[in-house]
Image (cartoon, helix red, strand yellow):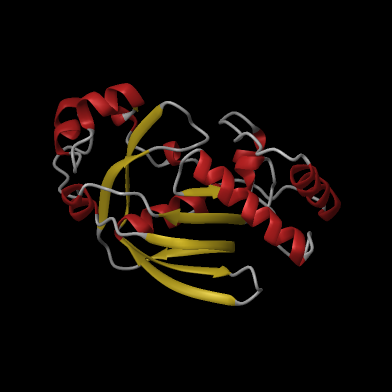
Length: 223
């Protein structure tokens, strides 16, 4: 399920120092872009590298960066912090017809530490995705329609939740980030489009037109 990314020896001191620098900067940090090694390394599992107070402040900072971007998820490596932490929230107003086709429902904010997911059932669905660490691009990704997520909450409790539709897609995308995976690793390469071309040509509720015109997922009915 995950990549061949190898664990890197991220010391607790290095992680703590990086977090302190972010928290003391007084401004929202920029989002790390593809090509930076931190996005390709297996992030360190959270094991108390920062205090509870610092963790709460980091989560708040990540949420602010996500909102400003704007996006529906952000992982700590995207701020240069090699830690298995991500924040997720989807409260955007979406056209009802688009939401129905994509199975998109509001996702209340939550933070997840040390996440992993498992597909539930064999159904997959393909839709276009973007990423805050890959500015200017969109691509279709075929993902499990339902997943079970195991993670630690910020209070340290171990939790298990099930997600479907667009929420499951967000969960998978962000969990992949802390395992050194970018969505393009899972994308249909013939579907890759600039944001401008996507908006002009492929922003329909499903991907059937793009699939036919760009020649990807031939004969697939998972959209």
